[in-house]
Length: 356
Picture (tube, rainbow, N blue to C red):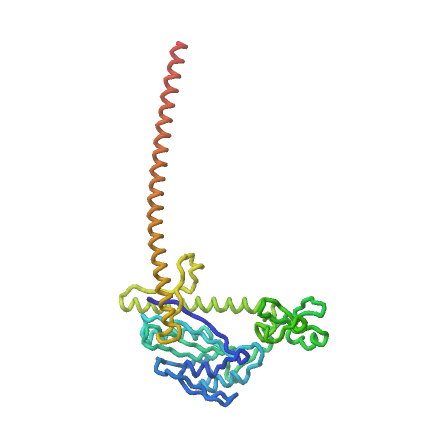
């Protein structure tokens, strides 16, 4: 049956990822990364069922090598993204035309962005799509950078006296001149400046990561993480709606029972069953282990369903017994009331007889 799976990954040079390489992987084409001069190519092109590019209306046709090299050229550096790459499972109940229609509807969620999509199907029951979406809007003049900054990076820093302060990236040079230092996470779970670490005999190798502790803050005061999470939740829900609409149409045409998927977690759906993991294609590293794990999870969930059914039966029997007891109590109450009525009647009759 149809399953729900969707994840999103940010593509940024600062994270060591490349939009050109991602486009080459999902499309099966050999693309040149103009920044490095490297050719990006990947094996297993036979798994690629279809590819395409969707651009906003009024845009001239562009090839993917041009699009993603230009996206990397206008990259501003730092933690900015060049693109987001969405991967999601496609319903195997649909044929390739139906799956393609689903993907195109998904691309329509980003009507001012460049969308580069591909459908992969190795014939192992795991058809899925990759959609690379540009971080910046694109128009006839190329990628369009917003005039105003939407967010800024803020570092956790520390004064020489040990007190903490948050410093925006644009103010870092001035803060550094005042003796303020950035704070890092260390492998022992503590947060220190490098001066504090050196005083304790620690080095850069003892840091958990090379990057300092920082958050991205929206200019309106909200946290960028919260905004990203809300956006992903919205996209996940939208994909469920797209897939379910196409599944319902396919079921109506074939006269079969419609299948549906749900983007919500078991917890949000008030289900106590353990969710399965995404298995991926056969032959991938760890696939056999994930299949085995899912078999164990499904077996546990089946036992849980059996126990739940038994409990429901016991609960129904208990409710029936409680109803029967309540009815007996009502009957007893009616009998007692009638008995009291008869006694009161006899008592009143005796008093009347004595008065006469």
